Amino acid sequence: MGQYIKNDRKDTKMTAEIIDGKAIAAEMQDEMKIEAESLKREHNLIPGLAVVLLGDNPASRVYVSMKKKACARLGIYSEEYKLASDTSEHDLLKLINKLNSNNKIHGILVQLPLPDYINENKILNTINPSKDVDGFHPVNVGNLVVGKPSFLPCTPYGIQQLLIKSNIQIEGKHVVVVGRSNIVGKPVALILLQKAQYANATVTVCHSRSRNLSYYTKQADILIAAIGRAEMIKKDMVKEGAVVIDVGVNRVDDPSAERGYKLVGDVDFDQVKEVASAITPVPGGVGPMTITMLMHNTIKAAKMRGCNNS
Ligand SMILES: NC(=O)c1ccc[n+]([C@@H]2O[C@H](COP(=O)([O-])OP(=O)(O)OC[C@H]3O[C@@H](n4cnc5c(N)ncnc54)[C@H](OP(=O)(O)O)[C@@H]3O)[C@@H](O)[C@H]2O)c1
Image 1 (cartoon, rainbow, N blue to C red):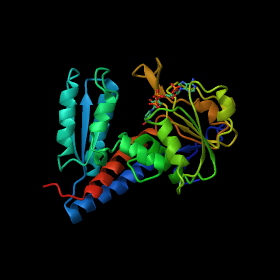
Image 2: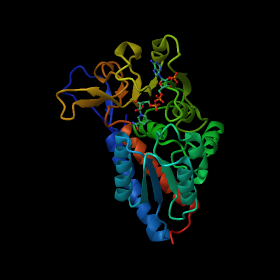
Image 3: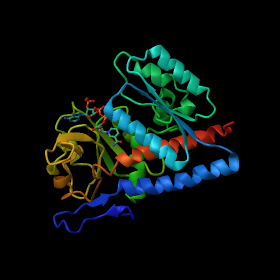
């Protein structure tokens, strides 16, 4: 396994190596910063990202501010649009159309979820596919399905990068994904299924109607949990030596924590680390990769457009 694997030898029960998403993300971001500097110096090209936030969902606010900070750190130009929670669908569409024709902006991200009265598909479909750095536009989704170049959704793309950077072989392995959302489960299954380098896995996708879930999870060489249920994957659901990627971010009460809660994944980390060969922690595993891949997609979008920012 790679340099990004860390193991806490003080914990005598632990067998799993810890996949250090924070370190992988930091190194990738360092490389991107250098790339952004050279685009500016050599091509007068500054990648630009617009982030649109509607309403005051506290978690969304935190994500948007993290994205803004990452842009500043990497030398990516960013514009933030904080819209009132009663903004109409018409006004949101108008803003997206404006951003579609703004030469300074190469990537557009509309922070999800949107309020119920707004048709999410209509909004996502209005973003120019060449600026769709979240990879949710049907053109990009379709290109992924048929194996053509596309913008890959950031969290699934980040999971593939975690595996690659940790020297975990994907080809020929049985990947079992628990969760079939359009944001994580389906795209990660498609990415790892591609007839391509760093893919070629045999993929099984499970969901809430799958019967006898552990029958499938126990067959996984690489188990990806994207469920949204705190610590649902237990030790007896995991094959000895499996690689376990935990996408879940769940708040659970913790009176001893300053905020009164702590974040846990979909995997019972303390149990599963005793049987897995490698595992991602929560936080510090998949999470830091999502923003990193957003930055990567923004730089890619800028390079594809190649226009200057004047
Ligand atoms: N770290 C990051 O950057 C990041 C990014 C995105 C999401 N997340 C986290 O990842 C988790 C999943 O996110 P998501 O957007 O994919 O969630 P989602 O849209 O709610 O999808 C959850 C999936 O899990 C399945 N599921 C629910 N209960 C199940 C059960 N008991 N057995 C088997 N499958 C079950 C659902 O099945 P059905 O389809 O049948 O309902 C669904 O496909 C969440 O905790 C989210 O916060 C983290």
